Image (cartoon, rainbow, N blue to C red; front, side):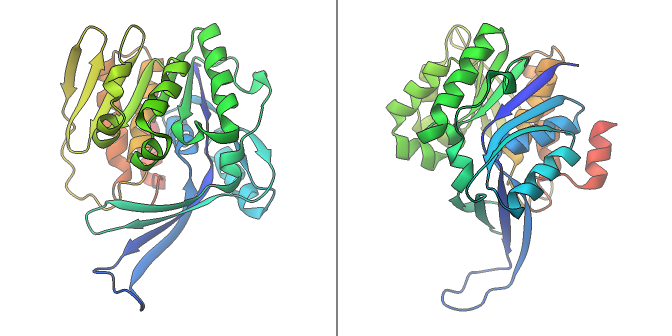
Length: 293
């Protein structure tokens, strides 16, 4: 079985489904649910649901929350290689009636991933990185993961993660960091690709995949080659949290099964649409069974 290694964040998501128009300074009705979160961890769990052999590399706090999150990865069939120190990160995600999210992250330990043994990353057929770990203490880990992936001729992917992240780093610096990693595929949504001018990174060995919600996904390859793949319509979108991570997982699982990019995008669309009706980056038990079947 071919193996995927995901390097990055594992946190607790506190998902708030707002009940209507928000009234400032008083109570507001809401549905609140705590779920496992973190972009890289979500890709790992989603890919495992497809039968892919997956290892996750990251950091959580030395606390009960971190212990519970690691146990959840194990139950999802993911092999965890996790540092334990400090306090576990959390993200409050407020979701409006259209399914759009506003996030308040406190990444804590997830942002402090330190040097890891090469054996945690080696042996992968594909290595997926979260851009949330591009800066600070975690950057050397991502750079080393890139070196190992290239030495072993593995597929290397990275998700651009966030408009706010690109803006805080600065688009030129963000592109420079990605260029250093030399990814095979870059995943981004339309706003991230535009702000970061990520098409400048397309070239020999690097393809940019731009997701546009219900509009066609764009595949930008070397030689000014661009194709689009339209996703099937989704009737009821309640929460877009984790849809991009599910897309990446579906895409990677397909590529590891020797699919071409157009087929892989279709597989990404198929898995992403399964997370749009419940809180957070999770599949229901019924959907997990359907995916594996």
